[in-house]
Length: 245
Image (cartoon, rainbow, N blue to C red; front, side, top):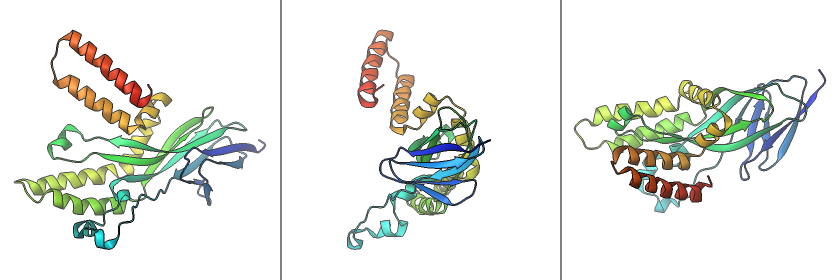
């Protein structure tokens, strides 16, 4: 097979995409730009991530002692992920689109009982219109700092209460689980088995959270059917105004 030209296109307009193909050197695909690669195979495996700077500089004299103890940083609140993808059935000229996205991680009913916290994943989404794409694995490259922060933060959350030790363990175990490679790989394997439109929805956390709140409201409040229909129409209008669809 002759060499094919494949385009890596970074859709993010304010951060570079860091791509490693077949464990070779890291390629930096600059923001809002394209990078051309050549391959003799119709299948490639690559990892990709966005290492965004989430930190906000706060003068030390204005930083609270507790925040310093926590080593507070916005990036430590988020599970930041390096995703590995396999794309097969590639053709000459195919474009692999890359974008930085978010995914909301809600708590389960059991986790809610223990006052566990929802979280978000920050990830590199890859899509290729004319090829087959699957998520091979996912790993959090800030897992250690994420867990370190929550170990301290959850101590503060449980300074009072009669079952604080049990809560702390459940809460910390939850944060460890959702940031583990095993869990992340399972989550993204499932997401990439969905149709594209469903996957795109899952990568819009504000919309997902909005819909969850509305669903919870309708499930808990009893009202006449006519009123429910009118209220649903109003909500649909607001949703369309906010999200465009």
